[in-house]
Length: 137
Image 1 (cartoon, one colour):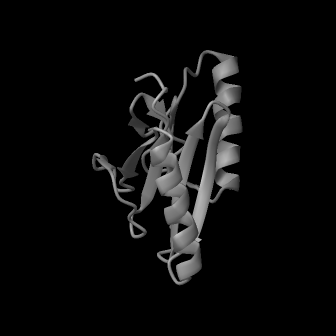
Image 2 (cartoon, helix red, strand yellow; image 1 turned 90 degrees about the horizontal axis):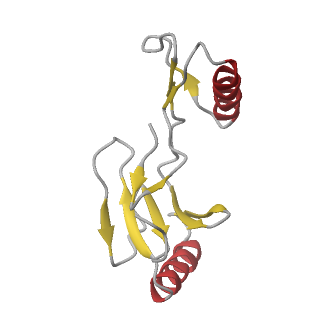
């Protein structure tokens, strides 16, 4: 299911629910499944049933970190490799700039545990989500 923080959903869905009697929803679900499979997700047939498709997210590279910056047009991603200090410095600078602009930073947990806000950049975080202060929620 989508991860929701501050009233904003992220694209980390692993469950797609739809009404099998509504063709538009069936078509929309099929398109979303195809899109996510194209991004490296795999089907979890052991849990899927009519009206539900369960997906297994792709494994993350342990050297890579990323930050999602939510905007009115979607989200931008900032990616860094923890093996390259210059990339971490660039991500840290972007993080500080966004905080100065009023964004709130959340750490998202891939294992489904509740995330929390942070005030300092953590290059080891699984995922950082930057939410602008003007977003409803």
